[in-house]
Image (cartoon, rainbow, N blue to C red; front, side, top):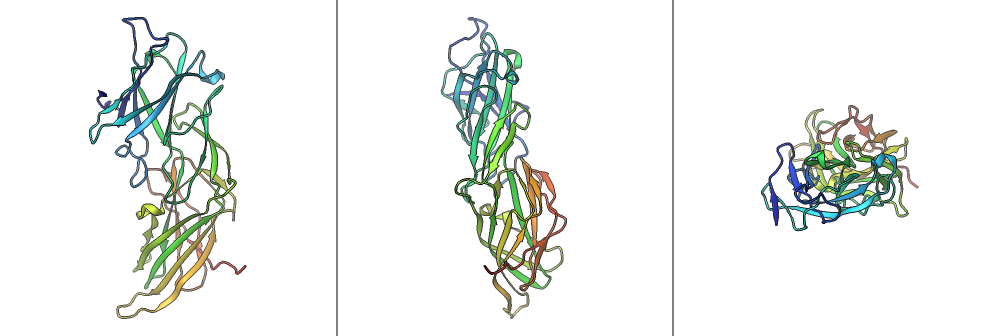
Length: 335
């Protein structure tokens, strides 16, 4: 298995491979070399540089620059590159790929690997976000209009989804146990099209699929509210990480329903003021952005009164964003 060292400017490096068609003349061959880095990497089930074990890269030849809508010609049909244990070495088994004599080469990659729709111009793929527990971090990278003088190619992988997180707060002097959180009204299908930019591309045709997914976390998140600053994050459990499609959300379109209990925090007492209560709140109009993470804080009450919340804040994927005004779910009306 062929090996290379990690490039100094990249967190990961791989060497590309090629067939012996349309290569440089003997003595003038220029091998295509790749590197890769995951931007704004985070922890848990989110793919980061340490988790990045393998990926496939696809290369297409064009006579002209891709922005002119040229036909993509097959060149590198999905080269798998894998990390060797805990080292910084990457290996592959294919023969080497070399730069063609004329024209340009366009490079695309997704993690996990997706079937690309290829024709004239930039490729695309359709993506459906599964239920909580089956969700995967989705990454993509592209490098376009490259020729043999490009040097080592660094593939800048970007997060394509929005990470939506939740925290809970409550009234001082009470202990809360949240056992379920449900999201309804979220669009679960979209088409991603590469565009040659540093952020890889854009989402279009984001919609509810024929069988829309209801996203739900079931577990146990506890909060002992000792002060107004007390809070608990649901995403300390990887089962409560919501990685969803970027999308514009209209007012009252997406609803959050929570099931929780509340009791007085006092030694020797076990007095419940709310037991397995179900409350609901609508998200305000907002746009979930690609490669960002947002945190909603649910302000739980100790009885059947309303739970409120307000405008969220956005941060880069690598930072935790929190909203300035908590939201308060209320008991949903009886149907």
